[in-house]
Amino acid sequence: MKKVLGWVLLFLLVFWIGTSPGPAADVARSIGDGFAEIFTNIGTFFVDLARG
Image 1 (cartoon, rainbow, N blue to C red):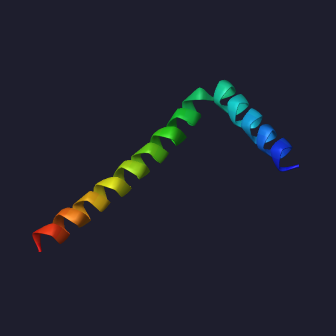
Image 2 (cartoon, helix red, strand yellow; image 1 turned 45 degrees about the vertical axis):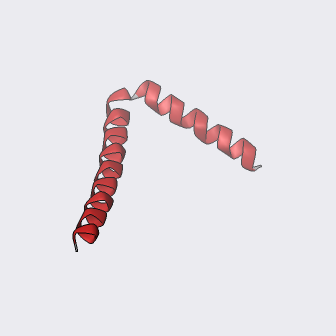
């Protein structure tokens, strides 16, 4: 059942990207920006920690 649900979700994701590429790109960009901000903040934390 889990495998079937995973395939259905993957199909729906591909279908959504194919039918609405603009909004899908916006979502992907937002997720990427979020990850970039997280890693930037982690880097800043460790730099500040090393400086004392």
